[in-house]
Image (cartoon, rainbow, N blue to C red; front, top):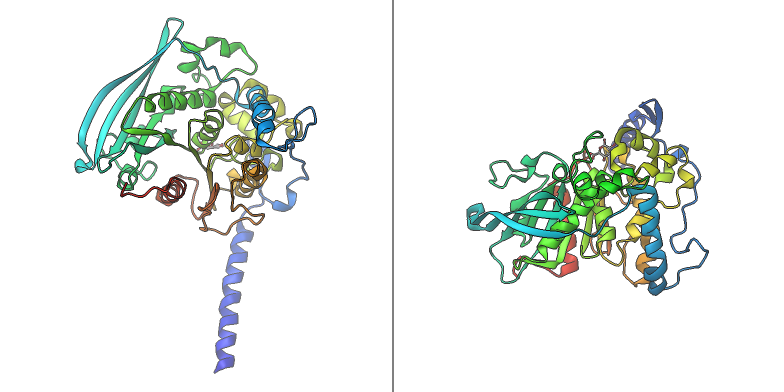
Length: 415
Ligand code: GTR
C-alpha cells in the first residue's frame, strides 16, 4: 500500500515535471523582429560588466550618502539626460489649476471626483493637461494618492465610472483609503513618431527639438507628472508627501524617470517596463536598445541611437535608474508571459541597485535568487513581483501596490 502510494506520487511528480519541461521547451529560444534576432535564451545572454553604481566617473568610490547625493547622484542624472531620456527643462513662466468639474457624491458617495485642467505657460505659449482625480470621502486627513501615467485608452480612467477597468481600478483604491488620479500621455506628447512634439515640447520648450539630447515623449510625460505633483501640493484634500507615481510599460519607463528626478514622489511603481525601464540593457534579452530605438525612437533622446549596437559603451544601465529613487520605496513587476520585457533582467536591476539603499541603511529583502511566480516581495524598501499572466497592469498588481504602500505608510483604511 505504502509502496503503491509512493510510486503514485513519483508518477504524478514526473508527469507534472515533464509537462512543465515540455512547456518550457515549447517556448522559442529566439525570434526575429524588425530584421533582428531576439534572444530568449538565458544561455545566450552575453558576459557583461555593469557600470559601477558607487564610483564616480573620476574614479572616486562613494562610501556614504553625502557623496552619493552631492556627486554621484547628480552625475548619474546627467548621464541619463545626455544619453537616454534627454534634458528635463524645469522653468516655465506660470502655472494655473482650473477645477473643471466636481462631484462630492461620486461612487455612490464613497468618493469626491475632481477634474482639473493644469495650465502651463512659457514664453507666450501654453498647454493644458486634464487630470481625473477621485478622493475617498471616508477620511479624517488629507489622502495619500496614486497617480497613474495613462498610456492606454482614456476609457480606462472614465470619470463617470460607466467603464471600469483593472488598469485603473478606482473603486478598489478608494475603498482602501487612497486617492487615485491620472493624466493621459497624449495630452502632453502624442505617442507617435511624427507628432510627439506637438504638446509640451513645441509649445513650451521648442529649443529641445534641435538638441541631440533634447527631451522627447518620455521626458515630456515625466515632466507632466511633476506638474500634476505641483497641483497636488495645492489641493488640501491630498497628502502631497504621500503621492506614488505609477506607470505600465512605456508608462512604467516614465514613472521610473519621473520618480528618479522628482523626489517629491514618495514612492515609485513600474509595471512590466522592460527595455529602458527596469530591465538591464546589457543582457540583450528580449527587447534591445536597437529594437526599441527602431520602433519607438520618439520616446528617447536622439543621442540614445548611438548605443543601438554599442550597448556596452552606454555609461549607465538601468540599475542606476532604480538607484536614483533611493532612499524612497520602489516596486517593479514582471509577468511570466512577457519575456520581451526580460523579467530576470528587471529583477537584476533591483539587485544591483541595493548598494544605493544600503547607503541609507534601508532594509531590502532583495536577495540574489529570482523570486518564484506569484511570490511578491512587499515588506522591503525595494519591492517586486513576478506574476503569472500577460504584459499588463491588473488587479493583482494594484493589490500588491496597495499592500506595499500600506506597509511603508503604516496606513490603514481606518485613518
Ligand atoms: C512594446 C514596447 C515596450 C513597451 C510596450 C508598451 O511594444 O516594445 O518597450 O513599452 O510596448 O508600452 O506597452
